Length: 142
Image 1 (cartoon, rainbow, N blue to C red):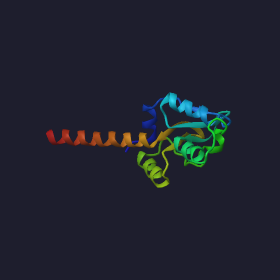
Image 2 (tube, rainbow, N blue to C red):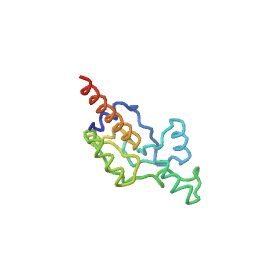
Image 3 (spheres, rainbow, N blue to C red):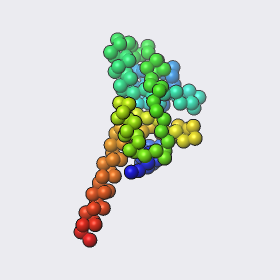
Image 4 (tube, one colour):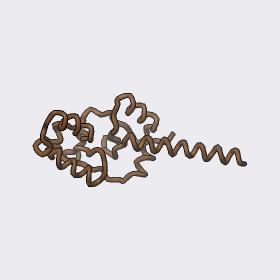
C-alpha cells in the first residue's frame, strides 16, 4: 500500500488557510471558491487546527450562531491526529474510520506539508486495487 507522500504528490501543493480571527463566513467563502471541505487554521506559519464543513454544521448552524460574528478559532478542530508523509494509506484509513474524522494534517519535521482527506484515502485505495487487477490480468494473459 502506498504512503501519504504519494497522495500529496498528486494533490495541489498549496493548502488553503485562514487566521484564527477570520470569520466563519470568510472561511466558508474560501472553501466554496476552491471546492474543498476544510481550511487549515494558521497563525504566523504555525498550525492551530482545521475548520471543516462538519465543524460549521455542528458548531454554528445547530447552535444558532452567526457565521459572520463567529471566529474560526471558536469552532475549529484542534485535536486531530497528526500523520507523516511516510505513514501508509491503510494507517490513515484506520485512524479516520476509528475516530470518525474526514481530514488529517500531514507534518514532516514539525512542518505542515498538507492535508489528507477521506476522499484522498478512498481514491488511493481504488487506484491500488486497480493496479492489482491490472497486474493480475497481465499475469493471467501471459
